[in-house]
Image 1 (tube, rainbow, N blue to C red):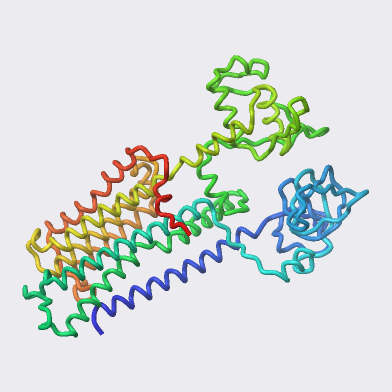
Image 2 (image 1 turned 120 degrees about the vertical axis):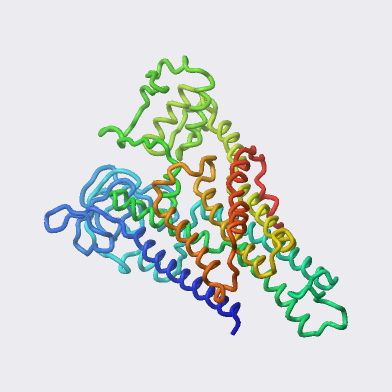
Length: 499
């Protein structure tokens, strides 16, 4: 077997082993998301256990936001309302009390109030378990970032296919027009004088090169890597006593700068009201809201409209306004609508339009880096021997070394897609520095010491400097891309194929 065959099987083995290990790791971490802790009263003592450890006879303590973990009976509580939409499809909340409705079902969620319930059936013996045993359900849920990465992967694949096809056509044309030479400088294709076996070998080599471009261009492991990162973040947060129910929460909270928490309301009517707020460090009472700058009022109105899950309804212009949502939502909406005369529909409309004009910066950086790398590698492929005065094997090593170093340097750009200073806080990320260092050491070993195994040639200091210089160009390129204003229409919209 040739060296190429050994390398081919080695790459396949490493890739398969890596994917298998990542899949096992993801399955292990994803189980954490379903391992929800809940308060129960067992043996006369209140304690926190996993929902998988609940048994018949446990007294379960429920509060707002909890998912009912078992079928059971209402014991006592206050203003308990549950969301049974997952069971019945009805969006209205159902009130549970000791006089009208005593039954609680697994899989429903507590929308309001609190209560204690007696577990009467658990696991597959519950109503939800019996229903789920008859149907299959896909629990895979994509976060917004994963959805964007899948779209990015698809776009990258299309670009890779186009580049691979272009390279295939160019290489075939160069060969059959007699513009290529062998190691001895002789013309490779001489019409009918060329042996069929030689033609087949060259064509197979060209096709293999294009297939390599396609394989490298499609980052199929990127969405899985992001999922693993989110699952790992969720596990770290749970170690800090922060319960995360969904992977997407880790991604969303990564963008949060201020977190506001509140009580559920008063003990009597469960109603809240905004009485005063702070504008910077200045205290503004409700009655003085009219003295605030109109631009600030507009920002507040937009903030209320964009950051609420509640709703405002008015049947006619003279009828009373109806607010729905949590007590906090109702208080903020009532304040904004009645005191600031906000029109929710009018404000939401421009906000929805504006939200479509917020493309990510990763697409622009990806295209810029891809084009520059393609230009550098193609230059080395067709002019590398004459530029550096080397033979074909050294030229191939230069191409391979430059490509790997480009990825290493571009990993720094990937640290902070929105910020120009990609080196901020890098000394604190020991894992990143360790990966970069390991990659560089392995590359040096492969180029300088694994000549027979990797089919490479040793490079001198000048050739190493040239490879590093070409790869380091990704830093100023990434900085320049971030200085360019983002267009109104995302570039990815041009790559969508119409069905």
